[in-house]
Length: 495
Figure (cartoon, rainbow, N blue to C red):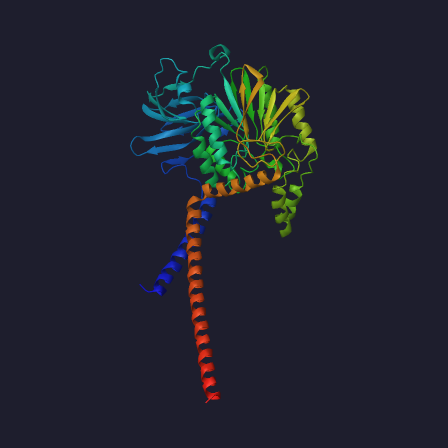
């Protein structure tokens, strides 16, 4: 094969690699996330007042408390089953069958062993499918109603062994977050709280990675939305995978309330009026229990010398067509000295007043990539944002918290390896984290584009070689002509 044909083939491969790589990159970031070819999602039907979800399936009415009905799994071998995602460690299910029927229910996001052992002499067939999924097979008579209600544990049952984990802002720190998951499984908590910023920019390929990692957790993962999670189509993807933006559940003598404050970084209001009404009713109904509230954005930034958050103003300017504002917005997203609390101080006071009015024990927060604890009117505010995202806050480090229901004041902080606490190593680590995350999120695209760039580099080298070779040949020929001319002139002059 001639060199020209080889070059033409190389150029064709170059364009194919770059075009396919770019197409895969765009597709990964914009395509709707599909859980599985066997899974069909259902529109979210969830009542936060009762923490319940209801659907008609296989001529039966199925209602779940402490979870939501996520969709239908159609296994070619075993048929259809209903998929329920738990929002609490021990969800309850009620089934009312209109006709004699066998129904399968797939409950995910639980500890299958812990859930199954809460039933004594159960008529239900329970099969552990994986680390966090249980399959329940039911046989019904026509008109029969069956309630799947696990026995509730009490303090005597657990004898101080009830633990749960608090973490936040894992975002694109996949390696650190994966290490945390391995450690958490060793602790075997009843549930894990993730305070939000599950992903970096709400893209489906980022949620896919987060979902794959968290399916390894052998406990119930209780999530809330962060400001990074709702970018692009992030809110829609979150809803399909993890359900309602706000909800609550009881466990023993404790009540946990999860809020959606994700708009509070780029908008003047963090929590909607509708949600505040629900929050107050939820805290009222839980009177007499120990109350814990979970939210992403703190009402106040406890750090000193922070600047005012001006992002909402820049967003409005960007909407009015001022292109410079978009650039300014991007730079402000990187400004770690900006206040990370609610933008409206009046809303911050409103939130803190509700917390103290209903004697909330602790408010779990993140958003700031560090760890802080402060008290306001008798309420403890704990900020934990070290689950994997870049560490640019002074004296910050990767960590998560372990709490024990028997002694909430004795909370354990588990630290993980972190970059040295000065600017150069921190920014270098942040840059490395970004590039590693980009590769993990877009591995096929990156490989194709690297192959394309390698071919491009090879073509440039070949071009330089032939150019250099041609230049040398011309130069040698030119020198030869000069020598010939000089010899000829010499002969002419000295004849």
